[in-house]
Image: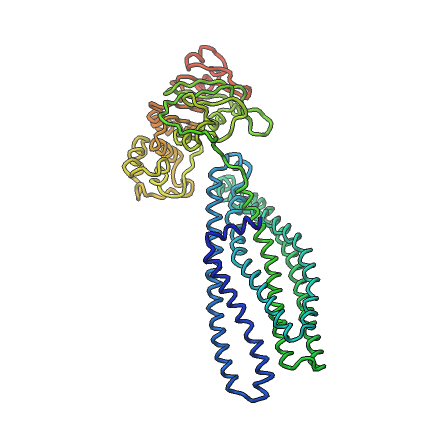
Length: 571
């Protein structure tokens, strides 16, 4: 995992090396004062050499000016390296998510995915900057301080270094506990984000049912778990930090007592005593850096592991011999198709359907019969368990997914409009289309007149998920989107079931225009809308029960006739 993490430094290697060089300059600058202090105490003060004191004053000012510049570069460019790595990781994981199957998003909450991409990667970027810097500085300062301390008195130096094993053992024991605490904390952050995203998205439903107290209680439950996880993590951090500080304080005491004893015995001079104590402080500083590094390493690597889990999720893949789908006439064949969602319950079993090019086939029946599943299998949103689906005689598994989906247009009951303008949402059907093409698509969807009546016309902001528009208006924008795409295959999944009768009539006109010359599959609840279909297939959870034209099915006086007559009486 460490090797994988380090690979993200490669595109920013020059800037990273510059950052480390600046960190080295900062570390070396900190070593000047102890050396100068020894000379001042042992030589310049007894000799009353004021001139040399002022000369070193100028040197130290210059050194600390250089240190200031180096520290600025470390802070700025180091963070930039971290941000660039975060940017690279976020782009990579977002691109990977575009290739993940529907099943991944069925099993993972939006809020938890967002938490991994935003919260976790922020801590990863902090580790990317501060981690190598702290480790590098600690190594340099430990080595240099050991050498300089040994020049003063090797035995004192060994006493200090031999006091380190308890600190190392303590840090190793707490490392695993820290890792588990951080992982649990991040999981709960994801749950809080998921609950928040869910509540905000459903705020209108909450207000309609006056369920603010219920939502608040539900959110508090997630928030309480988050606080509990935070408490555990902070308790572990407190144990680690306080225990480490205690051992470091004991090191300082050992350094003070041992060097003081040597000074009294005249084993070292007063200047050596001051120099040793300063170097002891220099020696203790990198130890503190290493302790901070261990804590940051656990936090950052926990976030990186959660990020890597997404990247390691198997994406949708095309077969090696997959081809581009060109010159599509639109014939669709289901050959002994079987499918389930992995829960052990079969949705489709040995289904056989042959839809000629340019024909319209409607699927009706009770919920749970697999009608929407049929629609989702054609674009390969899910993989078949058995059988095959062919378009123009070609198995869809032999077709590149992008090529397949480019030739399918979908209009569903649950219209999703992206945050942006009307124009941008229609343009989504064909991102490289001209403005004239967008307007023409809107006219064919019978929405141009409404759009031009808006204050900003096509540049009107639709709000999040199109909340500023009615259901019919959103539906016609989605239809315009498909007009612009102009696919040979069209899937209408309950496209008008959520609309009132008057709006449905308007939408039906647009849909009839859209269906002309295309192979069309319709999932419908209102049977009056599919009377003119070339074939109607009646399905339930056991499979296909009836099929035929509207007149043929009425004449059979079976399931379809019962459903139709029931709706006709209601109408």
